[in-house]
Length: 249
Image (cartoon, rainbow, N blue to C red; front, side):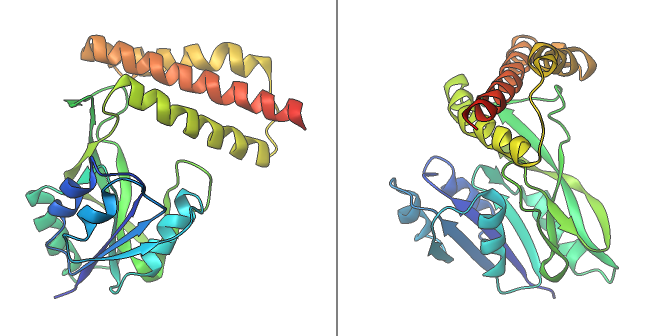
């Protein structure tokens, strides 16, 4: 039987981490890398058989790679603190990693929730992410935001999905949006992208149009309209911040 490690990064995740760890306590190895929580996150983590490390923040990708490097086993499941593994997915994972297949990584669909509601449209489902992989064949691409695992070799998709309890409220979205839009603007700047007024004028409404109409957000009613508007604002914010960075230089 192949064993599996779970790698999680945290900072002030007391509202999420218990449910996350509870859903993976079956794993053979639990690694938590914390970047200076000031709430009860670490107290909760100590209730579980997790190996806990405290490190300074290095960025999403580097922090996750650091957690992965500390795992004991070849198969690694990388999770965010607001994600949970249902029983059916757990059984599928255990079955897949014990098959004699030339597969080095698996994409897992996420069932995303906003304010406690499952969002089926707006491009939020099935939302496949590569989270289960052989440690010797995969690592997170080092970028400021929206980091993804790069795999050497064959990948497949699992049938079952994980639960992602994402933004708990509009306020939660806006708070994190400020951070993510700043990181996205810095990344665009580092890649040499130039600010154009076109981006500020047309990309935000296109984001709304894409999520609300093309990706059928209108079928979500108020929540689809809200999410489409919020992501349009995020797009506006990151290009505004890109212009700000250019001016400072």
